[in-house]
Length: 172
Image 1: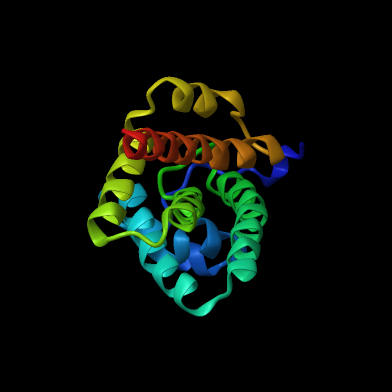
Image 2: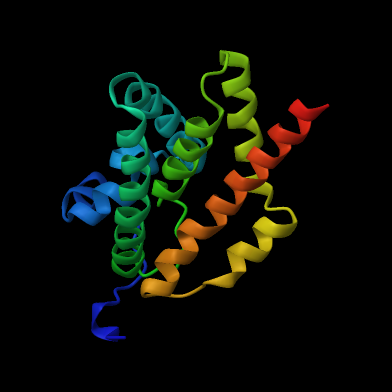
């Protein structure tokens, strides 16, 4: 790992976001710049964008966009965290975006109240980090490819917990 790439911790701005394509992706195309609750704002952006994606793209294309989002997100989160000098900054929200895409891909079609419930459950698991989500959050810490994976991983576990909760609820 080349430590010359590390900078002092910086607060992201619109100029920072626009200075590198990875920053734009990792910061959720601006949703991560929200002054309060950027993870929630990023999740809302993910929800809104998914409604468009599922309206206009075929099922295989939706799978492809989620896979591409995961891979591009891993790269973007790795680069942006390194450039910010923080291993898992709150302004990086691409992990929330892709996780909510995965959730909505698997639960749709569903009513607005079903979507709202899924959103609320995901935000609970992502913010509170109970059990397996806390484990996943600590699994890959630091900078480099491992850190970028860690940024994405805990949100994927939160998505799994959300889907498991919905499946258990539907089974009763």
